[in-house]
Length: 215
Image (cartoon, rainbow, N blue to C red; front, side, top):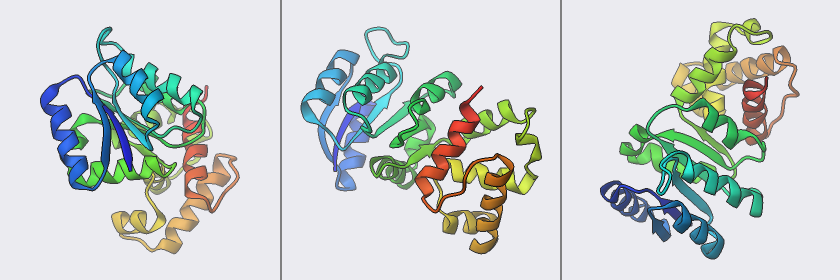
């Protein structure tokens, strides 16, 4: 799997390169600035981009904006964004086109190699990988609004894990319930949120995230 990596801190960038290569990813470009990222995404045509939000020269949202521009030029380009803090605006921008293949992780998650690599693979496959803290804040922002208020505490727990991109099997294991119970909770969630249920995990996650992001 071909990866373009953008991170301005040398030690972290080098560490990410080594980690991904250890899991058989091919790093086709490892860059440190916005302009370099733009060129690499256009020239290298990676399977997935792993991008720090803040890159030179602006150190604001340079990395995110480069990634969004690349997704417009190449619709569906998988992008996993890394950030030091939860920025709801960045999460909303990344999810705005609703086409999948997106992820938003806090940099703390990078230090768990298996979790990070799983997120890269999930995004590359067209799924989502949203940091639990991002999901929690989005849920909190919507929790006072209907129909979010209709969800039971258990349904909120299930929804958080669904939004992270977890399978029914993983959710069942995490919550120590049966897969049948997970399916029932998921069906109830879609009914209460007035969203059509789907057997496609990626589509249902995107539908939930789109709902959380609207308004």
